[in-house]
Image 1 (cartoon, rainbow, N blue to C red):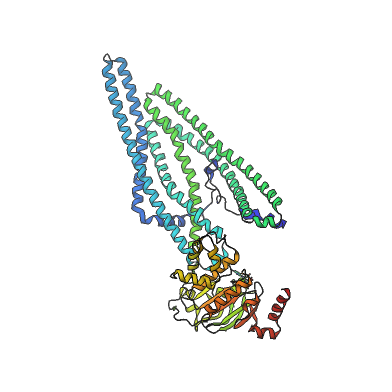
Image 2: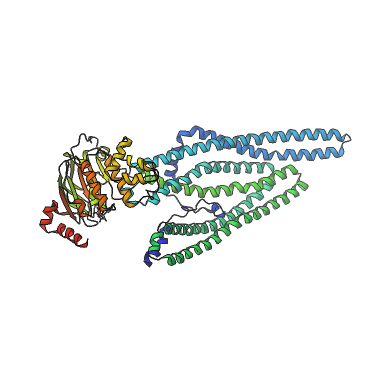
Length: 629
Ligand SMILES: Nc1ncnc2c1ncn2[C@@H]1O[C@H](COP(=O)(O)OP(=O)(O)OP(=O)(O)O)[C@@H](O)[C@H]1O
Ligand SMILES: [Mg+2]
């Protein structure tokens, strides 16, 4: 037990940094842990493919970005003539005798220039608005297509894929990865572009305004960038550690909440609390470091750029006195020197977002590149008027080629017969059902339905003709009625109710708060295990498929209800070939043939009476169980 409890946090720790709480605000947000994508070029090309449809809109967006950036730069440059004009007017005012006339003309001048400045900024605002509106539309469209493609792909993937991939990981493709891609498309692309233009534009304007001051900036800038880069690197390191700790803690909490019953059953509360305390303290330590760095980043950078600013103003002031540099020029230059580091910092931050998003996109695309379920052959046929003769002919199968699970299974089921499989856990009973509806393809041998090999039948047609009650029940969010109707979408309410009666589910459904309209949530968490099974049986009963597979369908149902179901199903099964898997041997007694499976082989077969007479494995199972009873 100790070991098990100890192993739990590891599950959380495996989460990718950033999976949980990755996008929360706070200082950590600046330092998203960076994941390196493997094939940047290819991934970008594929992502761009999602924007292709909107390429003209993209051109408009970039035109708007250019316009907005130019307006921004030009607007701030307007300060120069405004301040210089004011200086000139001041001198005129000092020297003039008609002071009132100077005031009037100075005001008119000022208003004119301010109006021009406002107009420039106005155009900039409109351009920014347009750019935002259009870009969000483009990126949301792209995300829509991406999610669509991903979901369509998921529906086409073979069961093997879902059996071998963690569901949590698959879900995080839809949530986290698509989210980060969205974030990149929404903001990053535009910011990267506008940041670059701003930097180039600012450099040009700075050199245009004053060469000497520009040289100071060019020397200071690398120092500032290096310092910022150093702090950001530290921040990223600590932030990644913080995210890992957060992931571990969240994973632990999640497991504790979902597994609380087991924790209580084994009296593990104290161990749990101890383990939680350790993780919690770990998170605090990591957070202190990460948040501290996040907190000082702003002030440190602010102070450094203040030094830069003061230097520019000092030297600029001297140039004004000695070199005839205009005060307006100094003002706009000082502004530029302050603004200059912003786009640089922004771009360096965006690079992280881009890497994270590309890594996410890579994971999304890797799912899209998965082999889909084997396609139907061209000449695959549709089943029509199936009688229900099922033959397994020397079938051999293994989930992995190197490990055979089913060995040389042969059996013949006449239409309408009931064939039962019994045998110990892990013998391969469910595996046979997986082969019948081609969740997995057989390695050797052949399965035929009405003499047609199932490999030559279209999959949808094949599955339409086989109704299954799976060993793991599943109910979708929706009403009881909708869940039963899943078995046949065009069934009427009366048919749904009849199916429920057949499955002995009607009486308990009527006792639910809203009867057939009761909402089921979280895989039917508000129902008992047996009730969930009854709904699954009702679903299969509703289907008109001529072949029925019941895998431990009644294992959680009491024996009396099971008898009821049997009677109901007998009517239903009369014309259907039925495969029944059950551990409870009373369930299979009346089968036409019982197959006893052991280690993937049929070791005994015959009717209940035959097998008892053989005094072999089945006899032992049956009599042993009776003794236990
Ligand atoms: N998706 C899978 N991938 C690889 N191996 C699997 C897979 N599913 C089952 N197996 C293996 O195949 C064997 C047979 O499993 P199967 O589910 O058919 O047993 P079963 O007879 O239905 O047992 P139970 O009575 O417990 O339901 C087991 O050894 C199991 O470990
Ligand atoms: Mg099974």
